[in-house]
Length: 384
Image (cartoon, rainbow, N blue to C red; front, side, top):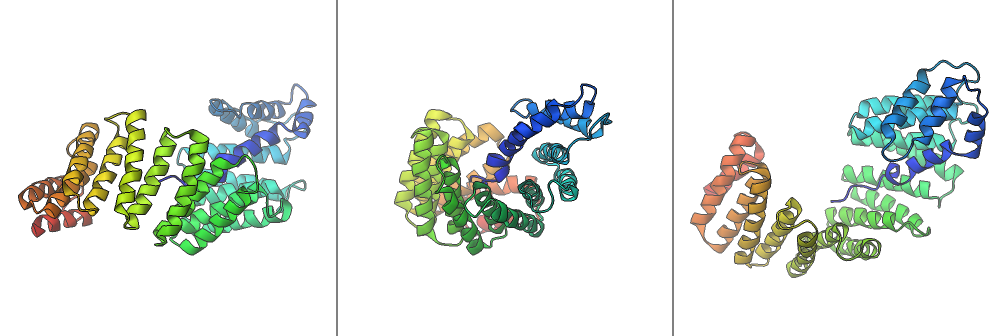
């Protein structure tokens, strides 16, 4: 499924670039003497905050933070930007503890600065960054604390209808979603969506928020609400990307899954076929995404009682996955299990036993005899 819409993907980097290139910033550093290495390094690294130049920008930010000042010291706001950018790089590399250290340095700089302080929107951005890093590190309660602080500052300084405020509502919803607190997740996602809908040009964020809401409604067992949100997401996706792109296939897949979980297997088959048609056209017949589309169709056909078609689509999925991942991969084991299940539903117990046994063999090799999935595979073999 699509990941949560995080503010740092759609807002914060643009804000950092804008602050680095603001008239005040450029005037401050434009007046620096040629010998002031720290000022020149920060200015140049900010100019490199564009795709494809992050490594060089990071190098210069790091030099700027340790270079001796021969005139004016680096302004607190710009030192904080340097720490934030370095933290972003660490976060993208999965080094969340190191990212948190850098974000905390940015926060300390801002809190101690007479020009920024604890209630400035830039400080809220740093709290947001800390929230994201702690969420990715699995510390959800700490993430909520930081996101809540960011929200409090943004509501007070930017207003209840600002996009940054909406992004923070979304981020809090994402943490509650991860904690399985579905009612709270819906509440905060909806607040984010209400703000987005008042701003022109935010259709991509609206699309993602509907997907988030669809996902959490599905998980809390509200199938009709999930379908409504996924339908709205599909409409936006088609407007943004057209009817034959991978994003649209994913939107059809979400709708297929929602109808499947709601027991509307015929509807699920229709949406899964729409997703498959796009996959075949865009990524071809041997791509793992195409295999997943075949597998989804097999599942809905099996639930609808069409076991022969289920076996057909499961087998197509298995053939692709076997070529892509090998015959001993756990994903291939799942394909064997699905085919065995369809044969069992069909009453062909010999074939079912054959595929269940293949699944068990892989599970014993990859997961070991004590694993819960291996125990389930043993149970399937024993049942037939």
